[in-house]
Every structure is written in C-alpha cells, then in structure tokens.
Image 1 (cartoon, helix red, strand yellow):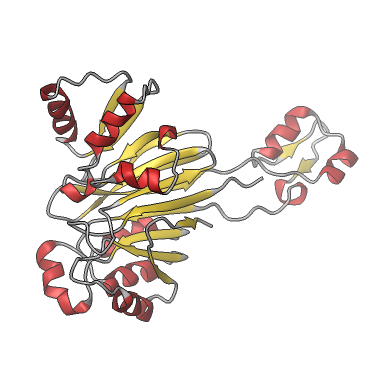
Image 2 (tube, helix red, strand yellow):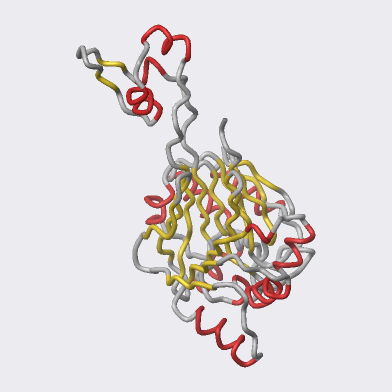
Length: 306
C-alpha cells in the first residue's frame, strides 16, 4: 500500500497577516509522520483551526529568521509544555534560533517538560537533516537577505510488491524473497538469476516535495529541486514590482514559474503573497503563462504529493 504524502497550508502571506492570509507555515504528512515547515505568528491557532494533530509533530524546520517565518514558535512550544508533552521535539534552523528561543524561556522562567533539541542548518550547502525508514529531509541554500535554506522531503524506495503466482512456481527461499522485495535481483544455488523487474508489480515513481521561501530569483535552485512532484515557491510579487523583488531578494510569480519549468517539476504551488495584492488572480495568470501547471496555495487546503 502506498503511504499518503501531502502538505497542508497553514499560512501563505508575506510579512504581515492580511486579507485573511496568515504568515508562512505548513505541515507535511508522510503516512503517520508530521513535519512542520516554518512557524509564522498564529501557527498554533491555524493548527487547531484546520484540525491538524499538532501533538504528532516531532520535527520543525525553520527556513530563516525573518519574523513571519518563526514568530509562532514560542507560543507553540509553550502550549506543548502546558499540555503535558513529554516526547522530544527537534527544531532545525539557522544560527541564532536556539538563542532566541532559550532567551525567551529563560526570562519567562519557563522550564519545558520535554526534550527540545536544536540542530543548526547550513546556508552554504545541501545537507541531510533527517532520515528514517520511509523518507529523508534535506536542506539547501537560498539567496535572501539573511542566511536561508529551502527544504526537500524525499520518499525512500518502498519494499516491492511481488507477484505471488510467479513466486509459488519458483519456490524461492526466504533470503531470495527478501532481496527481491528490497529491489535486488537474486541468483539461486543453481545459478539461475531471478530479476526484480520480472517478479515485482510495477511501482509508481518515488515522490518528493520541495519548499522554497524566501529567495531572489535563483536558477541555481534547479539542481536541488529537480523533478519534484510538488514545488512550493515564493511568489511575493508580480512583474509590476520586479525591481522591488530584486531589492528585497524576493521572486515574482513569473520567475517562480520559470524555476519550476527549468526543474521539470510536476506542479508548482505559489505562496508568500505580498499584502499589496488583495486579488491573487494576476499572480496566478503570470505564473501559468510560464508554467501551466501552477496553482495558488490556499490556507486550510491539503495538496497531495503524487
């Protein structure tokens, strides 16, 4: 059975909450595992509003230290404590984030009842942050006004579904069946080669999700997000604000779509919208002109990564 792999958007605005749009935050779910990516102001309220089981979150990934990407952390971590959390929580983020959080708790005399672990991200190179039996999480560098990373969640190869009827005819040992299930051809004692391609059902391609916010238009990102099933990329401005985008190290919707096209991703999810656009239809139109499979992120919506 193929595990569910999806992302729920909790916030998709830039800088300030406006027009019912909240600052950046989203939850990636792979099977029963929940990952929180960025944690703008009000994230814990959004988790409740959209009925996300926040107690299941064990890993939080923060892209950079602009407030609209992390100011919800102290409230969320405090609520975990008040609710009696005991499970460890790991936060991955840039240098200084641990100082910010521990200073807040020190001066409020808050003692957490659960282990809180900080892991510093590397804004200069790609890095494997987390891995279990089912998926990996990488960070990669982006170009913004502060040290910033994107994140990529990659599905790991699943055990193969073998064709039972063929296996019954072959009477292979357990050792051989195990090798075939994990993608290895098996040569039996008589020297016969049993190929995975002939004994396993076809599997759908492995899936991946890439998150890019915030960054100036940067073609070097393509190598980190190549072929992603779903790409979330900031699209703060339209082309009418191209110079503003360059000045503030942000991206226009058209530029985000150009990145998606160059990286040959399957779908582009637009977000991090400027408060100057109450109507987002122009952002979508500019993106679709360059990459047809572009959609606007919507708060509370869950998008399948497939």
